[in-house]
Image 1 (cartoon, rainbow, N blue to C red):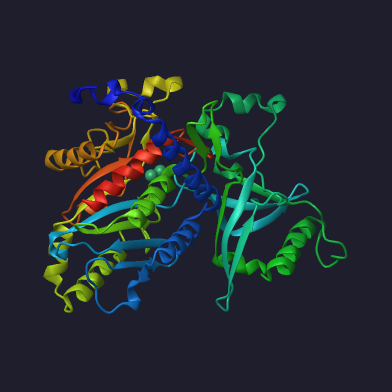
Image 2 (cartoon, helix red, strand yellow):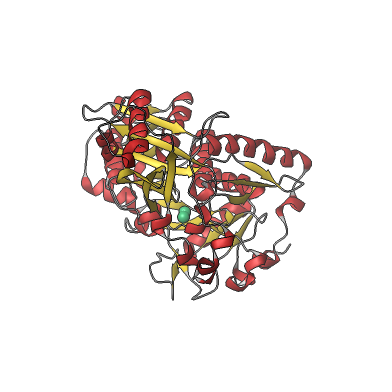
Length: 466
Ligand code: MN
Ligand code: MN
């Protein structure tokens, strides 16, 4: 393939693989598969990642007084934002190399007063999180995961729906026999937010004479929660409980080349970014993998990319590296930094070819996707990478044999999207979006090409190391 024939003419990456490397692709993905299957909330991704970092000798930055080349540190924010770093050979003021990805995925959360009873069933009322197609979340097995914080601060972990003999939860849909009116509705209205109520129980409490008929099942659920978790109804007010698909991660197709599961967006970049940092040899520049929360709802809040946490971490690094703190040093470091915003792009879908520009779409099996700009309707909201920086990244990838493609998200004016790239760009650092293409993005079961996962890892590794 000549270099001017990248993008839609690019070869299928499997054709460029030696057998040995194919094995490496499958091996890497089987580890990713386990990570994805076990970690379905940003808290879970964070705590597993901390474990992996500690196993490789990373220390909490609060435990070290000074920093020098080769030191490995991390910092955690509220259990849902994580920064890990390996100090580089070059001076900190030469800038950082950052891979940043988000750990949150679209899902369904509970309302503050979730529990009620109606029509002989107990339900949890919900509020969806991020851009979901609501009709995809009914009639599938759902798991309940997260934490409840009691008044005295005790943290109660809940994780139901994953073990073999666990029950699951469920949101019902109308039967086709009675679905005439539903069928005539727009897809966005056939299942709306008011329909997303989770079935959580149906056996009424015996000897519950104080209560009316209509609350006995609700009371039974409360009794179960009290017995099993020692929590009361009011404790649910202070909870981060998430409803996520209960299904496991599966290989797709006869050849097992695609991995299907919940949360590839954006745990695929979180995992590959973390693995790259863990596998790095002494990097030239100080390497950082930054994993954030809240991307799916605008990167707000204490744990989102717009939080000061990242900046505070770099300030602490600056102070511990130079043994004195200067705000100007911090600004210079940030300004000289370069970053990959690790996020997924939409994979070309032949079933819905009308929304893609085939010459500028990302394809499964064609490597990591470089997305120079995101946004919608004339690039609005995009930080767009400079031509100079794209050239630099392209050259790095080509030199390291990373298989990559260049794409944008869908046809112009068909829709659009954004990532955390623009918030990194606010520090006046170079940034470009780079991550694998995903089929059925934001669905309860997304697909990603295994070879793209592997080359995303290679791309991040080479970016962080060089
Ligand atoms: Mn994303
Ligand atoms: Mn997303």
